Image (tube, rainbow, N blue to C red; front, side, top):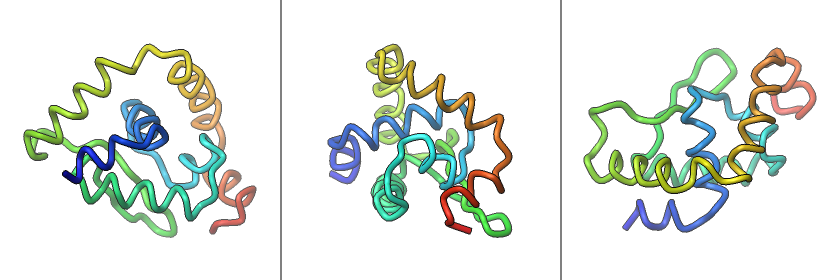
Amino acid sequence: MAITKALSEPNRVRILLALRRGELCVCQITELFGFAPSTVSKHLSILHHAHLILSRKSERWVYYRLPDKSAPVAAREALDWVHKSLAKTEETKADAKKLKQILQTDLAVICRRQKCC
């Protein structure tokens, strides 16, 4: 039930697709989608509860990534389905292009711009 709830919101699916590129800080996710930090936090909480993402804290930043092979089978299958079904959409391609630019920006600069850290 938690997985279907998590995948029922298009922006959470977009977050999962962005994380296919690798681990991202909350600030980078917020920058990518332009959502309020509270909205990003809620989306990440729902995805985390569904075991679709993992998190770690390092200094003042919290990073999220897709789970490894130790994740529940249902979560791994859901992530595979999302990638196979939606990775080639125009929206996903646009997100990937914007994410590439974000990843070239120093994390502290992004954080200052968002006034989050």
